[in-house]
Structure formats: C-alpha cells, structure tokens
Image (cartoon, rainbow, N blue to C red; front, top):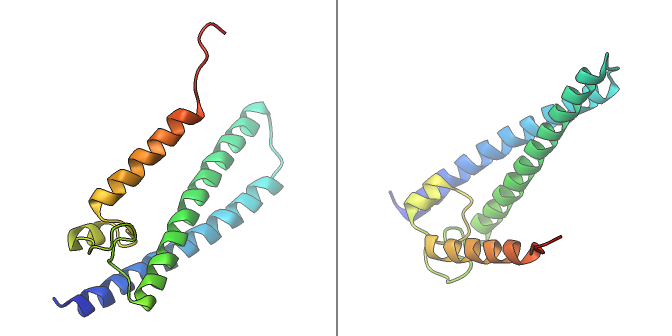
Length: 131
C-alpha cells in the first residue's frame, strides 16, 4: 500500500472513531442530565449516583481528550504532516499509526515525553516525613 492510500485509510479510521466518540459523549451528557434531575430514594442511592456520575465524568474527559487528539491528527492530514513525529521530524512507524492513529510522536520521542511527565508528577508531590 502506498503512503497516500495508507493516509486515506487512516483518515477514514479517524473519522469513524470521531463520529463514535461524539455519539458516546452526546449520550453520556444526556444521561448525566437525566440522572441529575432524578430524585434519590436514600443515602445508598445517592452515593451510587455520585459514583456513577464521577465515573461518567472521568470517561467523558478521557473521550474528550481522545476527540481532541483525533481532530489534531485530521488537521495534520490536511497540512500534509500526518505520520511525521512532531519532536524529531522522522516518520512514525506504520504499525504505531495502525495501533494509535492519532499518534504524534515516534516511539522513542513518546518514551521521552512519558518520562518527562513522570518526572514532573513525582516532583509535584514530595511527601514530608514525620508529619
């Protein structure tokens, strides 16, 4: 398969996933509105509703982030930079793009990004012993 055909195929994959995410988010938002209007019977029902609400909110956040990544990948396709690592400028391997169609970094640069994030998180919280 030629590069142009591959990119067209990936564009279709991204567009289908974007459509599915939009539908899911729309359903989750309407479900959230329904459950927030509902009157709860007792404390256990209220606690379960709160837990389900938090789970749905977290899921919606993850899906929103994926949707943004997909939109960015579709923009890179329009710009002609899809499949090019945004860090080092080398081509992202086809296998990586097939596994994660909205990947913006090659494996090596993604590992660097992940290490930097882990380092920032560990610096953000430093426990004070003896408190």
